[in-house]
Image (tube, rainbow, N blue to C red; front, top):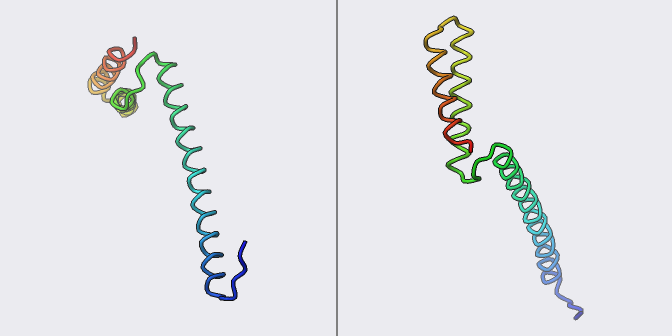
Amino acid sequence: MQSSSNPFEWLGSALGTIIRVVLDSLVWLFEILSSASSSFVNGFARALGVSNDLLTIVAVLLGLFLIYLGVRRFLRKRWVGGVIWVLLGLWLLSALIR
């Protein structure tokens, strides 16, 4: 390593090293988060017996949301709306699950 008498070169090198450590840490963090989310989606899809495509996962969430709407209608004593929403949600989920 070459010794330099210029303090600004030392300051630039130190700042560059700090930025490099921060960026490497962020890359490491995002790789961990990406791996964890990918594993979660794969496990979720495998447990349901559906493919792990984004559209399929969105459709599963939509089916669960429709069932949630139906349950809310039942709690408000709106029986016809509750039956319709629950049946739509179950129909969507049954169409997706193999």
